[in-house]
Length: 441
Image 1 (cartoon, one colour):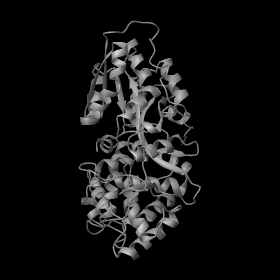
Image 2 (cartoon, rainbow, N blue to C red):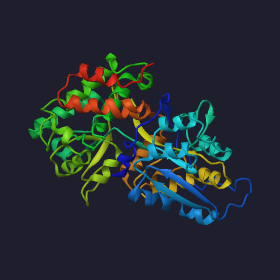
Image 3 (cartoon, one colour):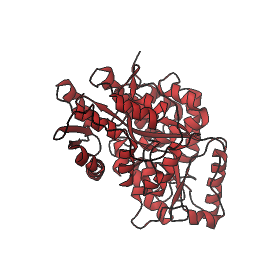
Image 4 (cartoon, rainbow, N blue to C red):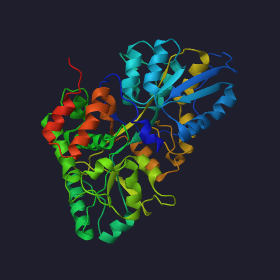
C-alpha cells in the first residue's frame, strides 16, 4: 500500500528532460565491490542520516535491508521518513541542516536540488556501481548538467492489467497481444457476463486522479511512441496536441463508456469516488473482470488470494499497437547526498550495489532495475515478472510523465483534469485546462 503513496505523495519542483530507457540485460547477482572502505578510513562508530518519503512498515523493511551492512562497517544509519518530505527537505537544506543522504521519489525534485548546489557529486565508487549495474539512461536520471550526483534505488513498472485466470478459462478468452485485441476482449467478456468488464478507482485523498494519469501515460507511450512521450514531458508537445487527445480518446473508450465501467461500483462517475485499492477485492470476488494498476495492487487483495498465472488473480502488461511492442512506464527513486563524509560515501556505494538490491527485494514488496538483482529474490510473482521486464534488453522504459512534469502540472492540473474528465467535462476543455498549469516562459 505504501508504495503507491510513495510515488505519488510529492510534486516535483523542477522539470527534468526525459531520457529514454532501453533497459540492459540481467547480470549475475552477488556481493559487489561497492561499499568499500572509502580510501581506508576507519568509519566505525560514525552515524549517517537518511531522509525519505518511505514510512511505516516499508521504512522498517528499509532499515532491515542495511542491518548487515551496519554490523560489518560499524556505521549507524539513522533513517527518517516523512509525508512532508519536499517541504521539510527544502527548509533543512536552506537552513544548513540537511540529512547526509536523501531518497528522492522523482528525478525532477532531485534535479532541482542539484541545480541549487545542495547536492554533492557522487563519489567514484557510486558512479562505478551505477555504470556497471544500471543502464545509461537510469544513470542519466541521476545526472544534472553533465555531473553525476546519484544512483537509482528502487523501481516499479506500471500498466498491468489484472484479471482472473479461472474466469478467462470459463469465458474461453486469452490474454490480448494488441490494443485492438484488448478492445475485442472487453466486448467478449461483456457478452458473456452481461455486465461491464472493467472497474477503476481514482480516489486517493488529496492525490485523487493520479491513477487516471497512469492510464493516459501508458497510451501516449504505446500509441505516439517514446519520442513524442519525451516531448510531451517537456511541453514541446502540449496536452492540446492531437496525439495526446488521441490517447485520451482511447482511454475514454473504456473509462467514459457506461457499458464498460464501473463494474461492482456504479456508473462512470463512481470512478472518482472509488479508492484505487478497492478494485482489488472486487476483482478477486468476480465483481469485475479487468482493472489497470501498477504491481503494488497485489498488496490490496484479500488475505489468502492466490496471485499466480493459474491462481485467483494474475496480470498481463497493457499491450501496444502491435504484438512486438514492449514499451512500459514506471517510477523509482534517486539517492543524493548532502555530505561528502567517508561514512556517507560507503553508505551511498552500498545502496547502489546489487548486494543491497538483493537484500531489500528479498524482504518483499519492492523491485529494482539493478541488473545484479536476482528476480528469484522477489517473493511476489508479479514483482518477479516486473524485474524481468526491467532487465529485458528489449524493453523501452519511460519514467512516469507526471513525476517529470512541473508539480503545478503533474500533481496539479493533470490530476484535477482527470477528475473533471470522468465527471463529464469535454476532452478539449480538460486538455486546455491541464495545459494552463505549465509555467509561463
